[in-house]
Length: 126
Image (tube, rainbow, N blue to C red; front, side):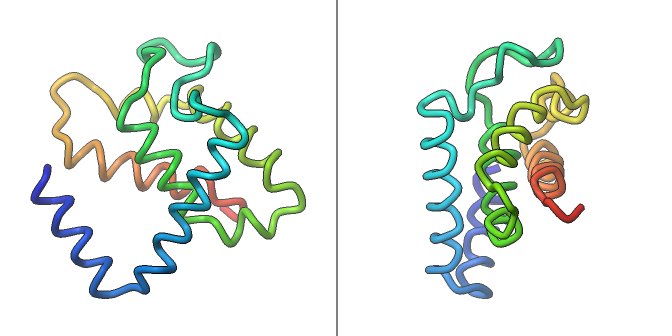
């Protein structure tokens, strides 16, 4: 998993504007903290069975990355904060989120699922 992440980070640094990527990530973190505080990546009370009420990597990968990847479209939304609140709350009710942490699932497979789902889930134009 570490090698996979290392290669992905190196690819981003070589192909994209690092400051722009960091700006997207910083925006996502700021929005999540402002709207949800230190519980931003903790599943809500209303969640599907199989999702424990604790931090998991699927939250970081699905929610934070999904927001960061869609910053422009979310920011262009009429009410970005309301959009983020609703989508984060409903995130935990999606069957795909349960499947992101199936027992025995390899980290690379989980990462591919969570990032793809989050990127689509937080896209206001999808």
